[in-house]
Length: 289
Image (cartoon, rainbow, N blue to C red; front, top):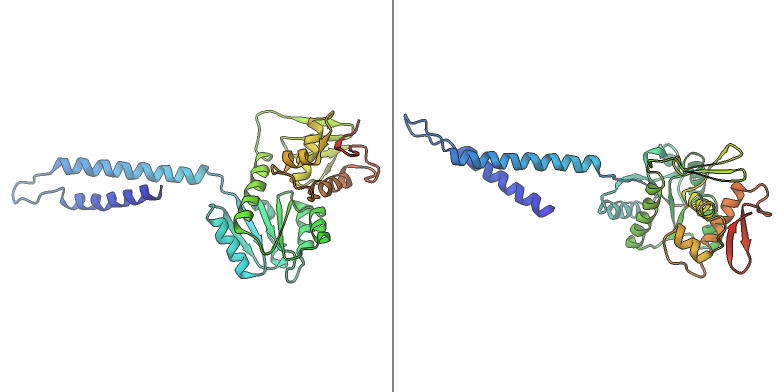
């Protein structure tokens, strides 16, 4: 497409040449070179159609908006430049106080650092989760398992440790956006999954328990949807990870366990004695009878 654009610019220069010399200034003749005018009109038409198609591409292409909350300017700019190459619309934020002033409905994904000035990243995460279920990727220098579990438990959808690979971050961003957009697109038919007091609306992307709406993250929503769509099936952790995260499962990865704990905390009357999502010892998890 870039080469095509250069080609068109070249033709626009030729078009200018034709415009200058289409009319032959012969004294008393008033002669017009109609061949050159025809070529000029063809080029004008081609340029017009190209501009229209370019506007349409910009109008109909779903450009995801991403908010980067990172106090280190070099890292923030690195993330911005990396994701802009993928044609994402990037907004930068450098402290927690400014992050809390943002309208989260304007974005499809947030990349969040934990150690932020003024307001800590964990507090920012809590506030975002009160208002929105959009995917959040934590990007932090904190490497302890307890830090990762805290971030995931409070509602983050992914956790990456610094230093990080820009290519891996891009892949994770694409994975999160693909699933978020998929489950937020309007469909032609209403679909509702029910189990006892739970009701999951796949069209509105909402979950209710006894007519009270629950605030689930996208991953928690997909996890619950998986169980409700397959009420008789026992899923291993590897199967759950593959179906919900779309990646290969690593044996030492406790992401599934942490997400199930978060989901139980929200849907169960007594999370330590669950009745909706049961543990099948030695195998995995299933929907309660």
